[in-house]
Image 1 (tube, rainbow, N blue to C red):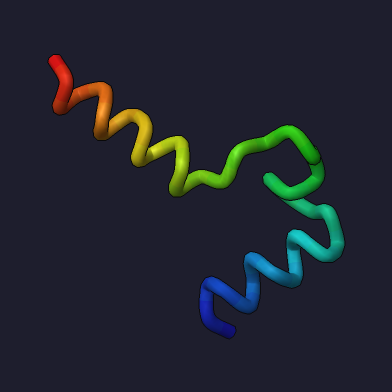
Image 2: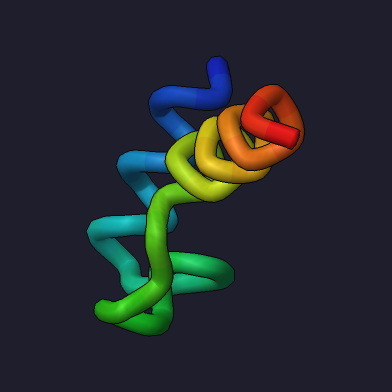
Length: 40
C-alpha cells in the first residue's frame, strides 16, 4: 500500500509513531528544522 494508507492504518491502530497522542507529524518536524536552518 501507499504511504498514506500505511500512515492512516498505523494512526487508527495507534501503532509506531502514532502510539503517542502528543507526537507531532514527522513532516511538520522536518519543516520546522528546515525553516530554522534557513533562518541562520
